[in-house]
Length: 484
Image (cartoon, rainbow, N blue to C red):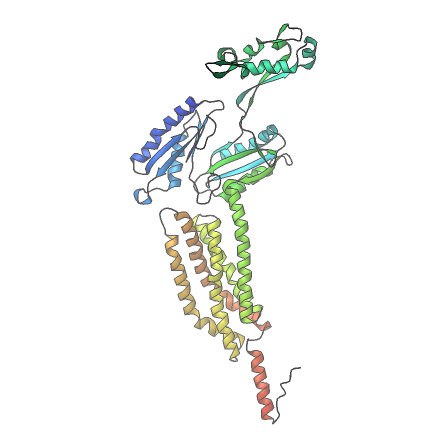
């Protein structure tokens, strides 16, 4: 997707010329087979101002090209960096995107009381973002460079000359806009009579100063006698968020830079600025990732709790499930290490992989602990039970872990459309399963040996009752089984 933004006040012809100049660049990708077709439009799709435009480069199927969409977008941005008559940016849409946003960009929304202080407050942050090699084309959606003419009425002079505010407003309306004076009928049709100054006579401040207004006495006085003018820059696009004035800093991310990296960098720059003048919020992919991360965090905690409660009900103990659940951090550490080695980030896909690892990791602990409990029921000591259990369960643990890891291998090695999300899940499951297997064989026996002394074997009570009954019978007594 291409987004084009020309200078403020630029007309359709100016933007159209820019869009036509982009066609030869986009046509190169169609000629080399990496793109099926392309489309450019001005104004942008769905409307917009005349100084904006959009373009779409529809890429060919993965089987017909060797580069990813991100690589093509990065090359395209390099070619477009030479555009001096407009800002042109190429980006790739993401799998989860709302409101036409870009998943490979970061948006920081700054709100405050007035646009001017917010704009000045953002300048050091914008300069730092422009120096960051991980960012591409940092920009603000507020640029006060559109020409603006301020007309200030002097009430004292106007009153002295007998000129009312209504007369001044009517004169300005007629000059810079238009006003319907009356209508006339011709051939049974009614037509409006529009008063409007000729275009050549409403181009600048000198034309305004040459305008005359009528006083209450019917005399004409120059408009410059009752008003003062001032030219300045302004923006036609004034945005608000929750009734506060808002300016958005947006930057596209180069390959190797994640949303988390961008947010951390911008937060560090915000901390260097005077506090209390502005409020920071996040938009686009950063907002989506924070919301998704919060939801996945709750899902992860709920999954841990449910697994723990199910194990507690099965083993009728709180200590045994705690030993088993210690394997989950080991698997999570392996998954995070895999993300680090693969250069990926902790995103929604990797978090889903971590949730899957809860069951995968708990399985190893269950195989060891359950068999150790059975051996203790047979009268073995804790040390003997855990050594024999670890030895006999080594083979099934390795077999099931290898099956799990190799089941995730196709995801990790996947190439083609959507490979990024699949590879992330595959990396987390593959490395998490390997780490959990290697560490479980050492950590679980040690932890079980430490904590098992605080609990009895599952059949301990039943065995003691049987021994007591046998002793009572041997002594010729009838066991008293009355409760209490």
